[in-house]
Image (tube, rainbow, N blue to C red; front, side, top):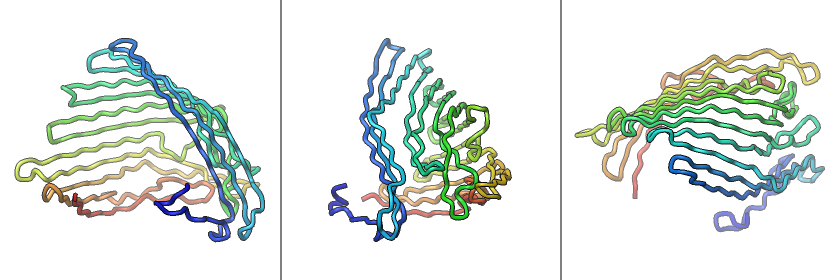
Length: 322
């Protein structure tokens, strides 16, 4: 970065910040995309990304460089993409897509070396439909992903002063599906519903990433008043998260003692309202987590804890357009 908001970039140095470690990452990529109109109903999309990536971690002691812990570089990595769409009916389109995966990561293994980038492929098949003069859209998709070098935290690390370390999981497989419906019941009233399911396991069939729920669902509605209340709009949402679990290590890295910790499914509700005082001024109210649901957004196994979700809150805002 040569300039920082028009000024010379700050001179960040370890001895000034007191950090004991820095990680530098450089990424460069170029894209290409093309569309082939094979027929009026049939189209093919091809493309890809060419990437260069480099990262390194350096250790410091009172500002003095001790060592370069780990360094990794990947050059001229091409990630292809291909997709096709076919209009089976005037209001229905089926599609299929395939893309390869290349995702650098900063996680370190037990020997303080960077894990290799996540590689693999993702395949998706879907159907998009529109009904009642585009007043109802219904979309569905199934997907399957195969990945190598997926990071999984090593039991016993990440606690008691030990930094978290990870192992690379080979042959991780994710499969699932998504369904979404967007409806306009009237000119003023809209509804949205969505459901998603995904399941991930390693090459041996062991479940991984279990701290994330397999199932999620969402429901949103908005209503725009008319007449004397034409400036008023209200809405609400319900977000459901299925159960999840992880194993908390109550022992050490050398002698782990794993105990299963579960998060039951939960629902978070929110309300929204806004009123246009005039063409330039709007006042709004957002109420988040309406029923003050208590839940963990994530279980941190090796820290023997978790992140609590945000409690009920209300935000009033006044916006003015100049």
